[in-house]
Amino acid sequence: MRSGKNTVQSELCLHQIFAQQVALRPHAPAVSDTTETLTYRQLDERAARLAAVIMREVAGPGARVGLHLTRGNAVVVAILATLKAGCAYVPLDPSYPAERVQYMADDASVDLVLTDADGAADAPAAKRVVTIDPGLWADDAPQADEVEVSPQAPAYVIYTSGSSGTPKGVEVSHANVTALLTACDRVVETDSSDVWTLFHSYCFDFSVWELWGALAHGAKLVVVPAQAARSPEAMLDLLAAEQVTVLNQVPSVFRHLSRAATAPGTTAGAKAAQALRYVIFGGEVVDVDAVREWRQVLGTNTEFVNMYGITETTVFSTGRQLLPAEIDVPIGSPAPAGSADPALNIGLPLDGFELAVLTPEGEPAKPGEIGEIHLAGLQLAIGYLNRPELTAERYPVLALPGQEPRRYYRSGDLAVVRADGAFEYAGRADDQVKVNGYRIETGEVETALRATPGVGDLVVVPTTSRVGEKMLVAFYTAPGGGAPDPALADRLTGHARAALPAFMVPGRFVHVPELPLSPSGKTDKRALAAQLR
Image 1 (cartoon, rainbow, N blue to C red):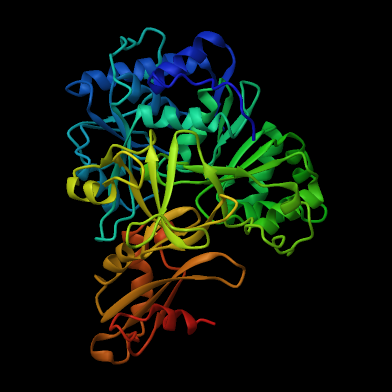
Image 2: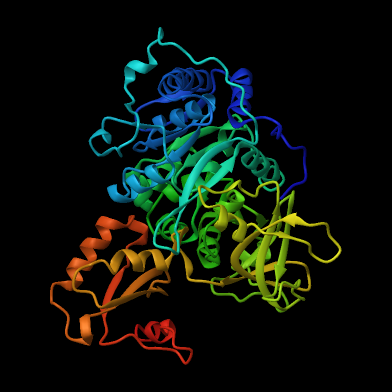
C-alpha cells in the first residue's frame, strides 16, 4: 500500500479522463485482443465514430444503450462510445440465456442495442438494433462532437441477482467510478507502464475496475479471450506472452491458476510471475493457501491485495495488502494468535468511505460483536433502476451517534469489528451467496427452477465441494411427496441452463422425499446441507 498523489481528476467524466491519456500518449498501446492492438488515438477515433452512430439513433444524452457483444476490443470501443454520446451502457452478455438478456433490455428500457455479427441473430428486441461493422471505422466516417455530460450522470446499469426471482439493475454514475479510481490510487500503485487484463465479463462490475484502472492511467488493457478465461494453462500463457503486470481475480479462479503455475514441469508460471506485480482479489473470501503456494514456488515479486466491495457501492469499498507474515509461511498455517484471519480480514475503508457495523437494533457493534456492514461515501450508486422503494430500503439515511444524518448502503454482509480496528468478514445476513465472485440470490434460482414441470417443491443450498469450491445444490421433491419422474433431473438441468446464466446453474440436483423444517417452520437448509457430507 502507498500514500501518494492521486492521479485521477474526480470532477471529470470517465471519457474525459480517457481523453487526457489520448493527449498524453496517442501512440501508446491502449487495448488489444486476439486480432489487433489499438493505440490510444485509434481507440479514441473508433469510439468517436461509433458515438456519432449512437447519437443518430437515440433521442439525445441520457439514453441507455444495451451492449450485446462478444469479448474483444469492440466491447471497450462501445463502452467509450456510449459515454462519449452522453449515454449509459447496459451490459447484455450474449453468453447469458436469451430470456434473461431480453428481460434486462426491457427492464432498462434500452433505446438502442449494439451487437456484432456473431450475436446479431440473438440480439434482444429493442427500439433500435445496430450491428457494429468494420466500415464504421473508415477514415471518412463522421466523428461525434463533444457532448456536455455531468459527472453525476449515469455511466452504466449492471444487473445483479434479485430475491424476487428477477435481476435488478444498479445505476452507477461517472462520479462514482472516478471516486473509486481516486481511492484505489492509494492502494495500488499503477501507471502507464503497466499491462492489465480485462478478464471478467462486462456484466460483472469487476470489469469496471479492470477497464478504467488501465485506461485512466495510460496503461495497456489486454482483453482475455473466452477460451483463455476458462483454461488456467491458456491464461498462464497469455500472462507470460503479454507480460501482464496487474491481474484481477476471483479467489476460486486464482486457485486453479496457482495450481497450474506451480505444477511440476511448467515454465509459463515462472515467466508470468516475473512480470506480475499485483494480483487483486475481489468477490470472494481469499484462498490464502493458493497465495502461499504461488509465492513459495514462484517467488515474492507479486503483491496480493484483498478488496471487498459490492456493485451498489461501485466495485470496492475496503482493501488491504496481504502481509508477508501471512503469506510467506507454510501452507495451512493458522493466523498468529490475536490476529485477524488473513482470509477474512477485509482491511480498512477506502478513502472517502465510512464503514459502520451495526447490530440488528441499529447500534454500532462493539469490538468482537457481529453486525451488518453499512457503507457511506462518494461511491454509493445512484440506486436501483425503476425501484424507488427498494432504493429507499437499501440506501437509508441514518443518523449514527455523534454524526449528521447521511445516506448509507445496507450491504447484507456481516462483519466483526476487531480491537485493532480491522474488519473481519463474517458471511451473509440473507440468502445471497457468492459463487466464483458472482453475487447470487438463491431465491432467484429457486423461482426459475420451480417452473420446471414435475417439481413439487425446491430449494437451493450453497455448499462447498470436495475441492473447496463454492457451489449451489438444488434439493427437490416430487408432487405429493411421491417418487419423481426418472427424467426430472435432466429436465431440471436443461431448464436451469436455458433460464439462468452459467454461474447460477446448480452443480447438483438432489431428490428428497420432503423438505425438512426447522423449529420455526422454515425450510431447514442446514439439515439439507448436512446430507451432502
